[in-house]
Length: 241
Image 1 (cartoon, one colour):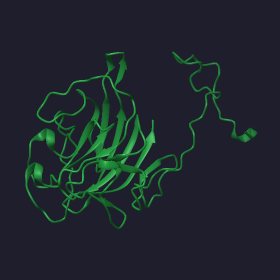
Image 2 (tube, rainbow, N blue to C red; image 1 turned 90 degrees about the horizontal axis):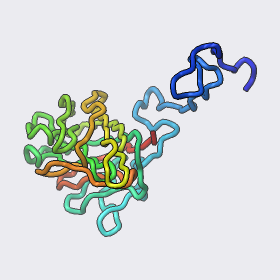
Image 3 (cartoon, rainbow, N blue to C red; image 1 turned 90 degrees about the vertical axis):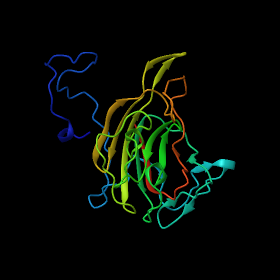
Image 4 (cartoon, one colour; image 1 turned 180 degrees about the vertical axis):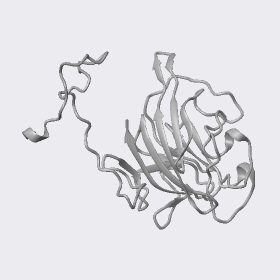
């Protein structure tokens, strides 16, 4: 590091509890530099992200019978009803997940039968995907809900056919043997609006049941749900935290 790049600071200040560093310590390691998305492409992956789906192929995904059988379109993939869920071949863990989705432009069905899908962290914890634009349903099953547990703070759903964004910040549960040490925590930002903030989950999501924890690994695939509606997805990426 050249002399003019050595950071300013102080070494005669109090030591920060639990660290070897003083307040404003110039010796403290600096954060790594990450190039953000371009200003005109605010949802493009930053330089340290792992791209899980770039709109061109499904080579990083699998599904029933070992194949991701969904349809590829112009920069997106679309649920093919009754072909089954798909999930990443790679296991992921704590981190920032970015997912964009669109409910069908042609409205069919109502309540849970309209534009239904889901994003499952570790294939166990569902953030609900649903066309909730002027489409009421039970609160803990709306778009942005932790399914069966916590409704979103607001309904931020865009009109059918328009693209929605989820930015999900996930910190999984911790176990010591069979004992739960700390529950999973999740923050969900839906179309730039926080709808779940550091929410402590009751366990893996369930349908018509109370969730509870059983020990499981800290990593697992990201899964997208086939709920018999042709929901579309694009621009999916992940940053470990």
